[in-house]
Length: 93
Image (cartoon, rainbow, N blue to C red):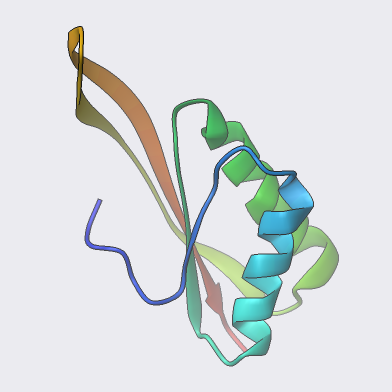
């Protein structure tokens, strides 16, 4: 994954609708693209965020790019692989 962009929503352990609201707010403030990023167990929540935002709240917005990767994280027990995802939504209006 590249450096965080200005319009990036990092998905964690909060309820999905919190992240959906963040994505919708970014588009309502004039963003042309919004990236949704997550790692590990939060990946499914990131996918839910993108789908709910697209299907319920945002007309004229499409999935532009989906990137999956593995990040190596240093822990006390050594190195661990963690899956990550970046979903880029783009405004076509």
